[in-house]
Length: 104
Image (tube, rainbow, N blue to C red; front, side, top):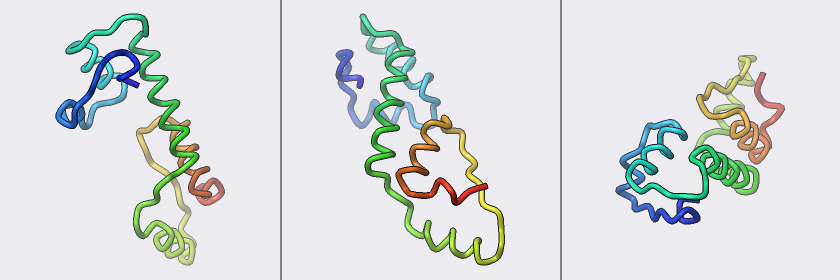
């Protein structure tokens, strides 16, 4: 997405923004390499669109996920997702992993 607005990111550039919210990360890169023609908000939406598509199409489960879910289900423990990610990304990940009916 940043390449589309003329900003080429390096690994070092990406490490600078580890832990920031998406809007903070976009603002950080804009402050260092301003672009024209696309708002920061739109760049954020484009990033979310790409993430959502990837999560639906080719999600990657953490090792042990299935075993963990099976263990707690066998104990009758209700399961939930706790995340600061946007709901659209959580939904996409759960759909991609086939887990939409797994959590309360």
